[in-house]
Image 1 (cartoon, one colour):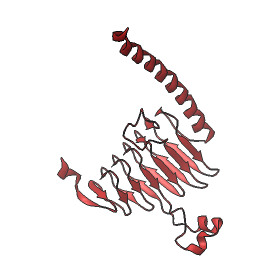
Image 2: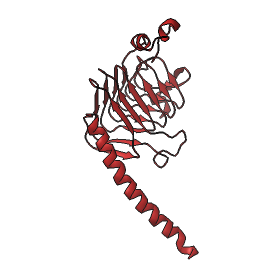
Image 3: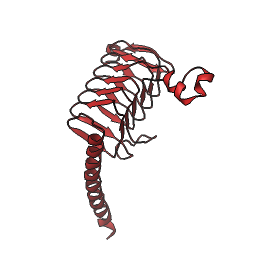
Amino acid sequence: MKKYFPLIFKSVRYLSRFISDTFNSVACKILLAGNGVEHKKITTNGIPYISVARGGRCVIGDNFSMNNNLRGNPIGRVQRCILFADNGAELIIGKNVGMSSATLHANQKIIIGDYVKIGGGVCIYDTDFHSLYPDIRKNSKTDALNSGKAPVIIGDNVFIGAHSTILKGVSIGNNSIIGACSVVTKSIPENEIWAGNPARFIKKVTDAL
């Protein structure tokens, strides 16, 4: 019996994964339809959190994949992916994009290009969420209206390393790379590697080949 245990274990795990994957796929499709998300082929491990407010818009290109659990993203700090588009906001994701346990929070506009890899735990925000002024923050309505907002644009073929944060008003040029755990506060040209907090230029992508 002992020598057959690994085979039995793997068979039960395979069946469990098949049932889980089927349920997750159906649940994800319901979430996408319920939020009016325009999309094509999507592959998912686990169930994401999706919220598109009335007047908001979310578009996902073909061949999108996301990991929302430990199985799909065994690198730590695991959470569900979050796709959020506020009232009047746009969240546009290109073709062949992959993300793990990441948050895309659009209060105004976030655009993700094609063939972008968004690492585990990455957060992309186009808003400060709160005002810089304490008197305004005391009132939740005026606080929300007076928070800084600016679109975030991520170019094609960009790779954003795990646990990085991209802040409002940032554009990242095609083919550029963001090192893990970076905080990006200003725009980055094409074909460059940046890392750190705040992120700074490290070298050209061509120099890394």
